[in-house]
Structure formats: C-alpha cells, structure tokens
Image (cartoon, rainbow, N blue to C red; front, side):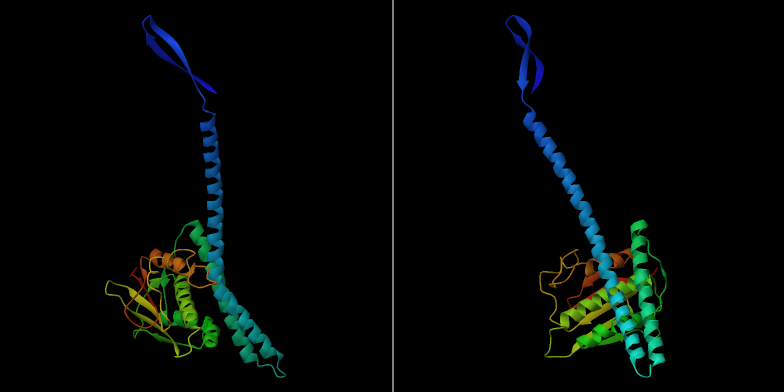
Length: 270
C-alpha cells in the first residue's frame, strides 16, 4: 500500500487530505514485465547462437563431405592387390584441398564475428568454378545432373573474396540439384553463366530445369530459416544474400519465363 498527500480546500480554508492508493498490482505488473524482458533477452541470445551454429554447419557440410568421399576413394585404391598410388595421391590431394576450404570457411565466419570484413583479391574465375564443380562432383554424378559453364573468353577480371564467392555458388548449385532430384521425364540440366553486368562488374546466373519456385514465395525465400525443403535449414539463401550484399552486389530470383529456377547475383567492380 502507498499513501499520497495532496492539498484540498473547503469553506474553513486549506486542509490536508490523505488519499490511499493501492499500487501492489502495478508493482507486480512491472516485475512481470521485467521478467518477460529478461526471458526475451535470453531467447534472443539462444536464437542468435542457433543461427550461428546453423550457418557454420551449412557452410562446411559440402567440403567435409568431399573430404570423406576422397579419403574413402584413397582407401579403396590402397586396398587393391596392386594399389594404384597415382589415384591414391590424386584423391588425397583433393581431400587436402577440400579440408583447406572448410578451414577457410570457418576462418571467414570468425572474421565476420570479429569485424565483418571481406578479403578482396584477384579471382581466377575458371579455376574457382572448376574447384566448385570438382568438390560437388559426387553429388552431381549421383543426381544425374549435367553441369555446363559458360564464361567470356578471355575470362574477365574480378576482385572479390574467392572463398565467400564459392560459398554462394555452392549454395545455389546444391539448391538447383535438390530441385531436380525427383524429375525423371527429362534430363537434369544445370547452367552456370558469367557475363559482364551493364552496371559494371559481373553477373552470375545459376539455372536448373526443375519444377521452378512456387509463386508467392519470392519475398520469403531469402529469410533465415525459411525453406521449401523438408530437411532444409533455410540458411543457404540468407547467407548467400548477405555475402553478395557485403560485396556491394545483389542476389535475386530471375523470373524470366524460362524452365526451372534461375538465381542471379552481381559482383560490382572494386
């Protein structure tokens, strides 16, 4: 209980009136609100941690899977009566390459947490794209997807963070392959194009001939944790968009009337 004193007036002059106000309910409400705020803060922290764990798991999944595949290939070659040491060495070199990429991805994520900076350097486009397709070779083969890459001749100059650019391409290619897995009536085609962007820099496109993206999902597909796949984390496109925008570019779904889905992104001149 709380007492408040306010002056009052009557015919005999000023007098002091005491008004008693019960503020117990208000104090309880304030305590409840403070507890709710603390709980929301705790939930927000766990959510941020979950997003970080999901992003790390998503980004290193492909290179680690490739490491396992190539190390198993090396073991199979060694188990032959006459081990093929050339194939063993090639498989181990690929495993070493993919392990290095996984380490580089983790390093980039740590860099994001510290300063959010990217490492720009000249990128060999042909080599970068070849490394991406080599890393995903087993998945592409198992899914029966025939990739085709078209680059200008000679390949244009690009200044970007090659590891982050590979992450974007891997995300888009994996999504394209997943979209075509159930299709049996026609060949599964994957087209990757790099052209000069009219606004400067380069424009990348990744197109599949799958069922396409359902109408009405354009606005949400780049949101974190939104996925059209039953087992999807919903982080790939959100991470990719963040990487592209950190480079000063833009990532979008190009609805140009063609078959399947086509995602395009730009990397401007440095």
